[in-house]
Length: 130
Image (cartoon, rainbow, N blue to C red):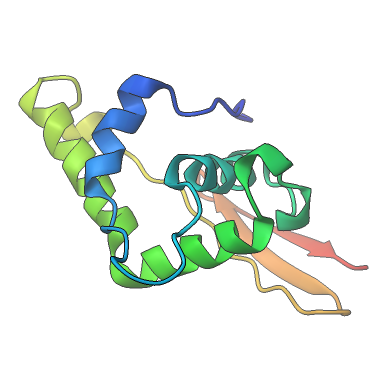
């Protein structure tokens, strides 16, 4: 099942924005958080390459760096935990309805990569080469 990318609307953004790290008081201002988060989501939902992120979502390198930095800093976990807590509190979600899907594929410059994928208990091998 493929998902269709949709930009964060105001209601969703208003729940996420307060959970983001504060902006630095000094130095160069960081790129617009909402645009960058939409760029990150665009890549994660569509599966496109970072260089193919539409310009309206900001610089692809900035989005890629921010995704990785916020992962290291626990920002994405904090957002997920807060949204799950909110869903429980409002009776919107139950543990039986909650799932997280993730896959990791090693990328090697100029070479080929292969990844083992597991879905609903079935194993398959996928190989890509340039």
